[in-house]
Image 1 (spheres, one colour):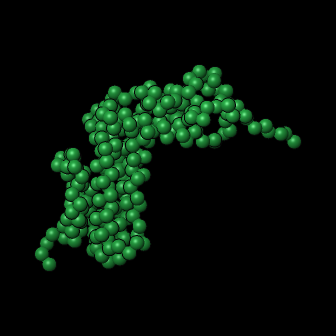
Image 2 (cartoon, rainbow, N blue to C red):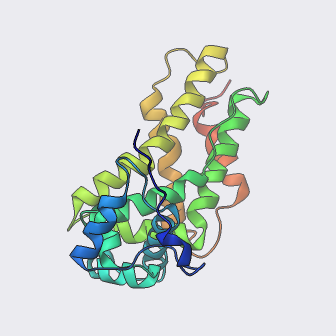
Length: 230
């Protein structure tokens, strides 16, 4: 029976150490050999790297000027640590931006709210998140690359925007099933009609202030409850 000895090499590390910063290929190779297959990378290092991306973009660094070296320096890790996790800047930025949207909660379909109130609440939460300094500046930075890097914007839409749209679909379908919304409602068109005005208004009229709290309610009442006379 073979006895496996624990690696005590980390015992002398400084408490503030978040990730190995060794860029020497031999050093990295030795550490990779010690790492068990499937062992996750340091969560602290990954969080520091993603935060560094958001900080740099949020401070106005254009996507085109952002470099992996800048990110590594801001995160306090070596370049090798960044490249072992992300092959290129596009993947890194998409993952970083995606973390912003994890703050937008899933709709609670068992909270007893009406579909109307649930939509108003969810759209308001989305608007508040987009207005936050970090999220707003990062969103603008990514979308500004649309003409020169459409692939990045498409990836951002897939991993950050599409999940939020799906949450709107869930609310709408629940409203259809409960009889609050008509059964032949065009869900995809309605999602666009709800989300579009929020983004447009925030990026053209509410640049330095939050969306008025009554905006989401008026939007839902006009589009979901109908604009025609009853």
